[in-house]
Amino acid sequence: MSQSLINPYIGSGRWWRGNTHTHTLASDGANAPQDVIRFYAEAGYHFLAITDHNLTLPLSEYDPCGLTLIEGEELTTPRTHVVGLGLDRTLPRGESTQNQIDLVREAGGLAIIAHPHWMGFTPDDLVPLEGHLAIELTNQVCFFLNGKGDSVAWWDHLLTQGRRCWGVSVDDCHDIARDGARGWVMVDAPTCNWSSLRAALLRGSFYASTGPQFQTISANDRRISFTTSPCVEVRIVGRGGAVIHRLTSETEQAYTVHFEAPDAEPYVRAEIEDAQGRRAWSQPFWKAA
Ligand SMILES: [Zn+2]
Ligand SMILES: [Zn+2]
Image (cartoon, protein in one colour):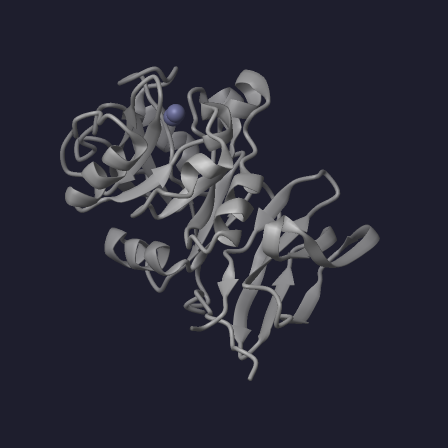
């Protein structure tokens, strides 16, 4: 009997845009925290995590400018960087990636493996790791630093090995004028407070984007269905990152897609791309056990 898909999306009808990786003058960023907060509010974001290196900056003294602010930290050593979201204190920087993930989780936070490609991790280095929410699929400052901002292939390797983790796009903003509002997540959650966002992130009710949007997305039985903002390409991706279905158009159009997951694929996920080459990535849809 063919297996149905697990639908991570809540279907709240609301989408909240946020950046989960941001630096300020409190570590090696170029901008004061208040200026960073104001920038993201004016760019149309709904939530923002401030994640300075080895410092959880208390945010209660700042004007949130309408944003939901999330306190966090990037646990940083020369060999590994892990972002912790939803922290109430500065954590020790840790020793290994797994140790950093464990420290974040023990403190009640969500752990995201930062920029694995830029870090020089092989895809296999990530396979044994446990307890992280996600890895960074794109990291804007790493594109600027040396072009190693794209870790999507690392994600497909993990997924193909049966490792269930989600994917985020981030600015890793060190300078709002250079890095700001280039990569984000859109969270499908009923409200935009931390407890609601946290539950949605854990469930996988979000997607990553550097431009285009999934306006609706869900799975029912073996079929995934979604609608998009104007795009020139839709790709359904399966095992190993292989494209198993592709739709293209000469000019941008809004797509409505229904796709039946083949039996052979352990997971399927959707990618969309606009005419400027900007992309969005759904979370993987796993086969139910
Ligand atoms: Zn980093
Ligand atoms: Zn960073």
